[in-house]
Length: 123
Image 1 (cartoon, one colour):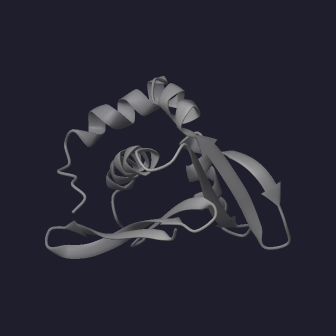
Image 2 (cartoon, one colour):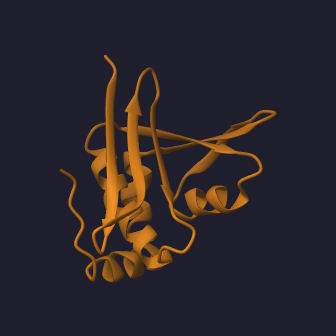
């Protein structure tokens, strides 16, 4: 069964980015933000959105274009690991158990603490 969730990220009444979860045969997540949006805001949204994604699946994938090294570093920072690399994409993967363990690291705890400064809801 195909499941899709798309959410706009709104700050100060303006759309500054978006996040999505798509489950066709492999559950995938992704996000995008305007270049000048706060890195703290991006991390806060990602932290909470990954929690939401892992409430829907036990394994989550990400597809990152090889040329987008910032996105690759971001996903690795959030605990994903490289599954495979082809001519255009890195395919990354993470399980719910890995994410829950990764949330206990000092960096993720700092992101969680910083996230308390943002109002984040998915509706």
